[in-house]
Length: 323
Image 1 (cartoon, rainbow, N blue to C red):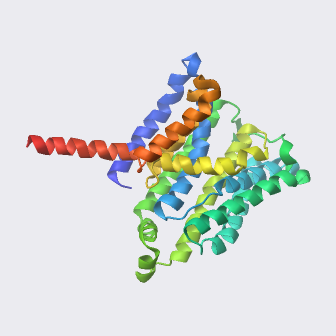
Image 2 (cartoon, rainbow, N blue to C red):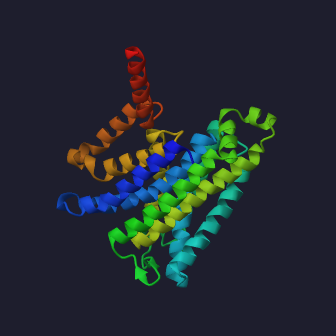
Image 3 (cartoon, rainbow, N blue to C red):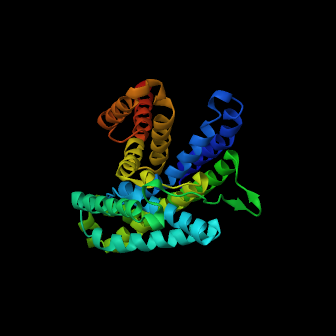
């Protein structure tokens, strides 16, 4: 892992450690802990999308489907077959990875808009399935009676305990993802993003890398879905529709598509905007939300992390001017 990433990671760990101590002592923002749990869950999906879209250059508009497959697999196995939540989560990951491989092998032969349309169609199929298979999924009404998670007999029945679990998993997957980026695989993904033809000419097995990173990003989404399921204790198809797929892509784009840190930053910003900060605008909150997204996309094409690069360039120019 690069030195710069280690420093940012240390800063993130310190922030996460201090966050509960701050918000739980201020009553007006104590519910931020609940929002941060969702930020962590969505961050898992955003990191997978960042690897897939930002580093490998493959578009996906169907990752809400993998989120849903993981969530429903874990929820159904737990509530209907009384399977352990952790075992149900593992089986959900296997199911999601299998589906992602079956979908990825043919669809990743497509490029650009065609690939986006293929993943969009897959997402719609899963959404229709969740709504129509009433006996299995509960249909539009969904189903409940899903157990919460526990570790060694310790029930994760409080927001603080679930916050620690979710962000511990996020940090593990973050370190894993940063190591992928800095490895030979990461260099292969970046060359694939720049030019698939050139990557092929250099002997990189582009088809294998594309499918592998697609399956890995689906696995991230499946883990996020299981964490969501056992935190909520209830599932309905509305949480896994097309709009959510687009929202996931926006999180990555707003933060900075070519950076894992950007994916985390975009997820944090859009989750807090949508769930808390824009409520002051009441009926006009969606308009303000859209205006903010439009402004970021128009004026910050590299996302929010691009601001840091511009600040560094400005400081360097000032330093050179003094000398």
